[in-house]
Length: 181
Figure (cartoon, one colour):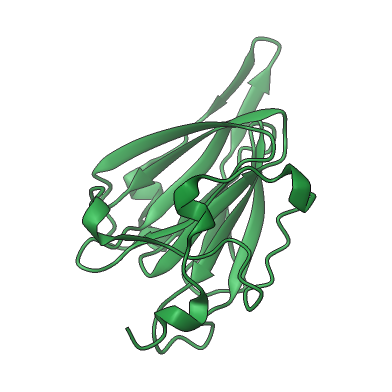
C-alpha cells in the first residue's frame, strides 16, 4: 500500500496493492491495522454505496458536530472526481479543496477526516462509490456547501450544461455564509 498526503493536511490518497493474474485481481480495501497510521483512532460504523450516471455531482455534503464524519471513499465501478473542502475553523487551509480521480481501474481511495465537506462528479457513463463513515447519518446535522461557489473555484471536469444536481444540492450554502456560525 502506498499512502500520499494531499496538499491539505489530514486528507490522504491511498493506493492499495493490487495483485493480478490471468484470473483477475485481488485487493485488500481496508485493514484497520494497516490504515491505523493515517486514520489514528478512526473507527468506522457505517458503510454507504452510491450509484450515479455521468454528469451527476453530489455534494458538497458535511455533518456538523457532534455528528461530523470521517470517510474512506473508493470507486468500485467507473470514474469520479472526488472533492474534499476544508471547513475546519482555524485551519491554515480553511476553504481550500483537494481533488482526486477515483476509479475502478486505479483502485485509489481517499481518506477525508472530520471537518470537511465531501462531493464527487461522475466522469464515466456511470459509477458506483462506496465509503466508510465513522459516524452515523444524522439528517438534522447535515448541511450542503454550494457545489459551484465561486470562492471555492472547483473544476468539476464536466461542462456545466451536463451537470445533474439534486434539489438539495442546488440550494447549498456559500462558504462565506458558514464562517462564524
